[in-house]
Length: 172
Image (cartoon, rainbow, N blue to C red; front, top):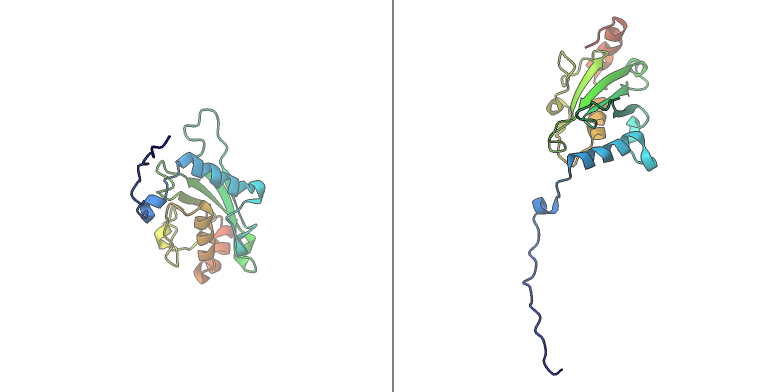
């Protein structure tokens, strides 16, 4: 009763580096959260400002045989409002790589064709060519990519040629 027990004292915890503070979120968890934002579950969305209501995306239909049910997405981007391109719906697909979110989703437009430096002749988007200096990081969202693309669609070249190409039936 009279003896005092000495508790082992731990040295003070060192401050954690930024890298240690960031936890790696499993691909499936991040994609399920992405899905919730895409469909607006509980009023969640990552789309903001002039893009809200003009970008729509979600999981592609899949069957039980699908090898990666969270890996294929599709959607539309409605062109810039108040311009001729605002009449157009740009169809795209998203392929989610196995090392997502460290690696960016792969965006491919199906049509209509557009004149954007970031979009190649087959409809694939090179995110590094989006201006101003878009860079994918693991903490970004699919919506960030889609809003950056739509921002780039307001370029004069794209606005000038998109409607003409669509009327001519030019698709990827």
